[in-house]
Amino acid sequence: MEEFLNLAGTATAITTGGGLGFFFVKWIFEYLGGRMDKKADRIDAGMDKLLAHLQAQIDSEREQREKLEKRLEKVEGDLAECKHKHAESEAEVARLKAAMQGYGDAREKAQLILASERKEAKK
Image: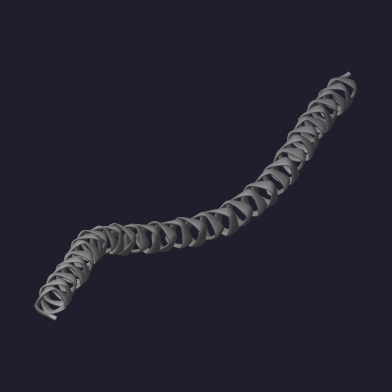
């Protein structure tokens, strides 16, 4: 019976030691794994923050580009209108120059006629 008790005590000690050893090894792996998870979580949080910042920057750049495109369309429209008005003004200047030249020719002819009439009147 004494041997049985010794054997039972030894078996209990081995089982308890093995169980405690198993839980200790399990705890070490969970602890180290948890630390790795925390590191990965910190990296993920930093990456999420960076991506959110980059997305905000992209949205801002997109809005600015759209504003610039609208402004460019307006400026191009104003430029086309200005070119049209400039062409009209140049055409008007050309007509006025032609009219002035025509008036000059008419004055010259009128002076020639008057000079001719004076010359005949003196004869």
